[in-house]
Structure formats: C-alpha cells, structure tokens
Image (cartoon, rainbow, N blue to C red; front, side, top):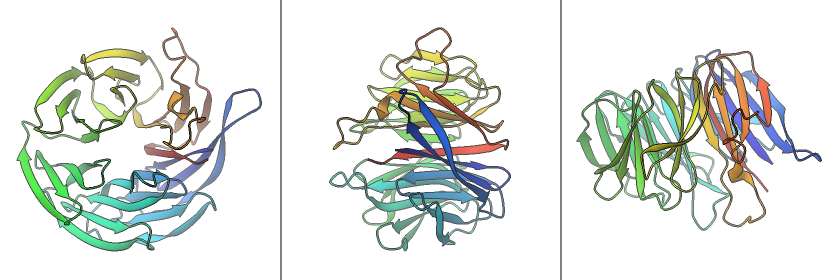
Length: 318
C-alpha cells in the first residue's frame, strides 16, 4: 500500500491510501482529514507508518498512518517550520531512525524517531531562516538553503554546522539525487542547477521558464519539477535537457511532488512507476510514469480536497 499526506493553507491535513484494484488501476481512498494546526501547513514528510507536518504556528505534528491517528506535537522551533525529512538507516530502510526539521528561526532540529521523538539537538545554521533541507542517504549530513542566500552543511552525527557558503542568489529548494547521492540540485526561482556532491561544482543548469515550486528526485538521474507553469517536467540531469513533460498536469500551480521508490528488499513492487502531484486548487493526481511519454496522459487516480494545498508527502508499505 502507498500513502499520501497533503497539507493546506486552511490548516487541514489530508491522508489518502493509494491502492491497486483488480483491474490494475489505482484508487485514492481517503484516510482522514481535519484541521491539525493553528496556522497554514508549510511542509510534510512521511515514512510509513510515520508522518509529520510543519506549520506557520511554529509546531510539528506527528501521525501514525496505520492507525489514522495523531501522536502529538513537537514545539522546539521559535518560528514557522519550513522543511521536514525522515531518515532511515540503509540497513533498515523501512524504519524511521531520525526526523530532521528546519525553521524560519534559522535552526534545524534533530529528533530520535525511534524513541518517542526525543529532541537530540538544535543546530543554528542560517541567519535569516532555513528555506529547505535535504538529508544525505547516509544520514551523516544534511544540506540546507537559507533566506540569507546561503548554503549550509550540517554534520548530523556531531550535531553542528560544518560549512556555510554564499550563493549568487537565494535558493528555495535543495534535493539530493536518487541512489548514491553523487549529485544535489538547487532551485532558484525558475532556474535549476545540478551540483557535484564532492565539490559543489555546477554540472548542468536548466531553465524551467517559470518559477519552480516543487521538486522530487527520480531514478536514472531524473529530476521532476512543478510550479507556476502548471506542468510536471522530468529533467535529464546528465544532459540538462527535458526528458518528458506532462503539459497542463494541473489547472493551478503545482505545489508538491512525490516519486514512489522501490524498497531494496521488495523486488516485486512497481512503485517507481508512480508519481503523485498536488496543486494549489486542491487536486491531487497520480500518474503512471510509463505512460507519460504519450501525447496526453491521463492520471491513474485523482482526488479533490477543495482546499489550497501547500505540500505533499508519501511513502509505501509492504
């Protein structure tokens, strides 16, 4: 089973299960929806059965997706929570080990997800707030981008900032590539840049045409982006060219993307063929990546929350 959670400007969290049917189609079945925060939700993360949302009310809310229930709140930030990421050990990829959060207070917080979300450390990183973070697959470090037009590196083992550099302009999104994380990606307005993880040199640059608001790494060097152009674009980050595009994927801005990845111990799962997208008009759509190269692909499943969606997260379980 695959699950999706979406957050909205109206403070609601929406939960869905993505289930295959006998006719080999997928259905988005609602799990829950309720106002979980006191202010708009800004970010979400999921690693089944756990999920988390961060809000402009400075709090993080935790959920158990298997029980469709809330687990509690984390209140260690002093400003809106802007980014969340679960980390699992490569030896146990289906079990959440840590939760890392970022905030407009310029700090990141590290939690032990396996021990009732004990707060391990608060690490000051940026002077003007953290816009986004990405945890390396090893779990040893994280990259951050800030409102101070900086890029930071945090040693998650020692719990301290190890580097802070200056960018030519502020970046809103940072992502590691799929697999060995030999590359990372930065999004600055409509520009997407590909960087070598060893020395941060630029390997390729792409122009999205209009502002990019969401990004998700796919397999084989692909990066999926969505934004103000209302499309979902797959970029070949090796050549810096568009691999394919879902033109008019939504009727409004694309605010969230999720690529379902195959678990290393589940060779029968076809999750890597599935991409989910969410737009600010409240619509969530699920796409079969094998069909995207068609002239006008149709979504496998769709749900309308009738709210202004701000983020999307997803994960799968056996």
